[in-house]
Length: 122
Image (cartoon, rainbow, N blue to C red):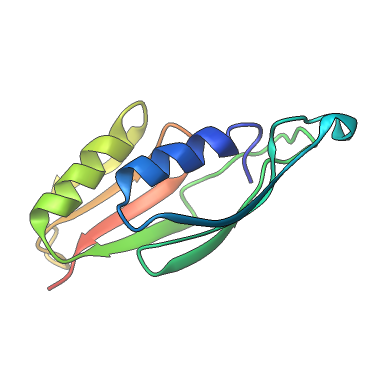
């Protein structure tokens, strides 16, 4: 769950993944105390279906790499492009490389704290 950056994250992901679709989105109103933030959004991309929210309550925790979005790619160019874009402002946990289990793989944490594992399918 995001803490105020869900809307920006959705726009970033939509600009990176060609098939990224926001199926529905509900925004908090003025009375909620979190106006303009994402109450709930349903999205699909890369064969994933996710619910994205901004928490109206501050938490002492954030995203961590123990949960990752795993995305398979059919070509190196697409994987490399997504890696470069998601890496901007983030942290590389495993750089783009051949690790034996995959000809091309990377693990990153994007600028919103979301962990991504990007893999070239054999």
